[in-house]
Image 1 (cartoon, rainbow, N blue to C red):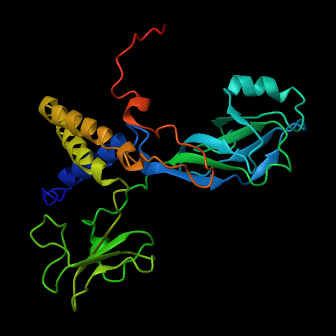
Image 2 (cartoon, rainbow, N blue to C red; image 1 turned 30 degrees about the horizontal axis):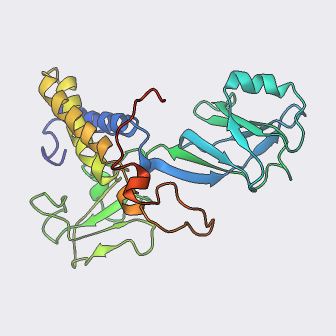
Image 3 (cartoon, helix red, strand yellow; image 1 turned 90 degrees about the vertical axis):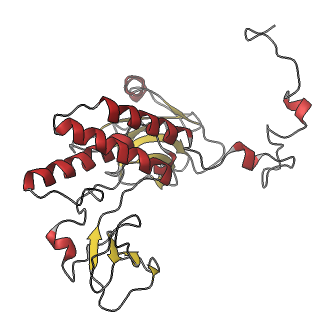
Length: 292
């Protein structure tokens, strides 16, 4: 939409918005991106059938769960399938046994997941945490709506950009790039200097990392051609290339930045990657893949 300036007709505008929404969704769910990894504490638990089973309604933004972390270093947690969880539900698990967990659809809510635990945690279920991949923030305002350019419009969490007294702000590659921007409701998020009498534009932000951004743009071109009944082969080839490059660059802690010869703190355990090049096998002769 930034490159086309919107459409002169309402039908064109709707196609552009649909292409942006579809591309945003497709790229966000194409891979378990590191950008969406986060953590939280278990809450809103309810007792199961009296045998130590616990159920937790997960937040609405949960896409998938990585692991359940107990509050101590003794308790062992292990993922099981829903069918295995149902079998363990009829057993009497005592304190000290592993804590088994699974994720199932919440029967009471149409768009929520439930985390279900089989086992008897030491001290109850308090203190348990979990890591998960969240869903991206949905798009609602794209900056081209009339309300987005209305003075005083300030939805919490949206991005507000400032232009000049004569022109509305555009992106950095636009003809009139913004002079300042901030996230509404977030203290200290203002970047740049606000000109006097500047025109403003409010929009939701793309909840993607920088390495995912180009893939979103390419996917939007695919959807635009698809919705307008045009040939998508060329755009699809570019999108597949950009998506592959985004996946390859989805790294925030490369091994090259973590390799060290010292012990880890505070565990004081020798890291598995420490040692000389020969100890690591860099210059050792290749052996058979099937073992000795």
